[in-house]
Length: 237
Image 1: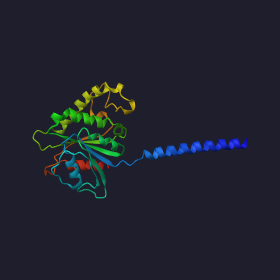
Image 2 (image 1 turned 180 degrees about the vertical axis):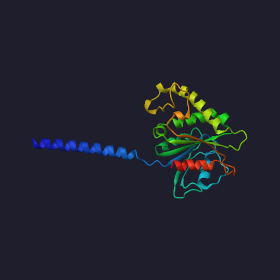
Image 3 (image 1 turned 30 degrees about the vertical axis):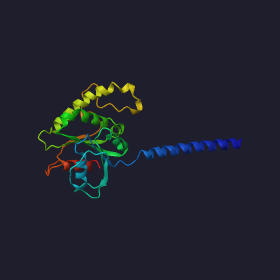
Image 4 (image 1 turned 45 degrees about the vertical axis):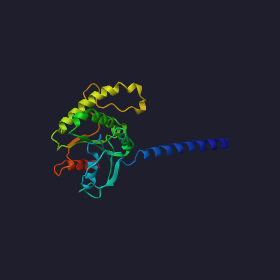
């Protein structure tokens, strides 16, 4: 009888110890360091130019990327003790999905828009932004998003207020389209609904802090908007 009780005690102890170890592993795994800033957007919006500007305060002629640019560096002209992990993702629709691999460690998302071609690319820009905002990691962690309205030095560039309103209207339309297909998808892979049901979409309706900034990366203008981008990154560091 005593041997039987001893065996039961040992078995129960092993089960409890195993459960405790699994809980500890799960909790520590969820504390993965979030230190990454993602730069993304559709093709030719100026993502790589921004990456270079942040790293060494220089720009050069760039071409459509087929691989991400990644680095750990202090922001040019800022506190050298603050090291930022920055990744610039290609804008091609077959490659840009790679950002999803980094959302668990993402601190902030910088979404770059070409203000001069926005009217022509409004649908594609809105669809990609919707995908990012509806990502479960980004929503659950309330990750901050900076929408950079680039190429403001072009005469046909739209101001950030116009771009914001157009994005809200287009995302509002996209919600209806996407909601119609939800029932056919695996529930675990369905992105969260954006905003409030039965109300027109507004960026203020989602948990993520959304900021818009105007920018002109390839000019020597001291008011190019780059300092505002740096300030946002430092604030979210």
